[in-house]
Image (cartoon, rainbow, N blue to C red):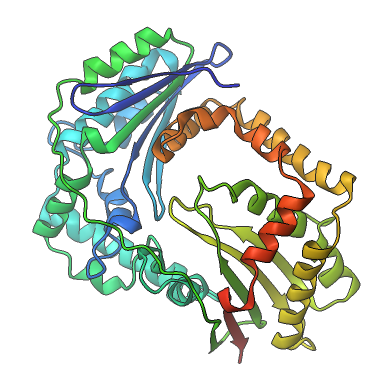
Length: 411
């Protein structure tokens, strides 16, 4: 159980705080509700670009990292399709250093032509190294484009093409900054051994005077129901062929999420999971296998993927996936197997609550989802999943006409 207090400042900034009496460190997390899903299809990759630009300094603080290091702290950030997250861990006595730095770059990021050109080159090189010049690098990009035709999840956080970043102007990025990096589009979450009122007071001190720049976000097009199977085959210079099959599923807050997450763990949660035991160890069809969910804010995907052994055909791998799905639909899951997976989720949740940064991040994340109290209800949600719920989910989700299959052939 994570106790917390929440307050919305006059300028729209949401503040969530948790007192952790066991930690000597403070965690300050700043979540901006902007990800790849908020981008213009003709200007993708901007949220990820700003993850880089936000460390390039302001007029008041030219070097963001130096004050963090001087305060014995550590900081980093990440971007995904739904949001951008910046976090700092440092001794509790130095917490105001983190709040000062975050408030400074929220209101006064100094984007110069030189800084922009430098970070554009870094991001373009990252695109090439991670997605274009690496074995299997473009596999996720191809799968997104196959599974989504309308929704902006059809591109990854890195963007549709490096050309969008290469062509970005200073005016483009300044417009993006003004639209998304302001108090009412952000969530500040703090976990530290400080009185909750004290933390809220510090948030007021450092952020309360920042002006807001509210804007009306463009509506996000929703993906229409898929009614026909999709299929794509490509050939690449890779060691082994892979088969990936994706099915549309609900959002992170949908009633199906916990059942889907549990099913993915039943199928591929370690060496004792069903897919690994049956398709890797017993039948020797695959050298590796996985089943996972994307857990997106909007409806996401349930994905099966496996790397084939030389004598296995893609058709055999697809048939094996279908057989395992059929088993879940028809047969009751043994109590010990269901309980093992539920215990794993509960243990992971409890261990996560021991880490001060995990708590700060999770408070921001659940507030972003629109249900902060969910942070303390999820273990019960997993416990409530039944055999009937699993069978019903599998029947509704894993239908052939809802599949998107990518065959990634080795030359």
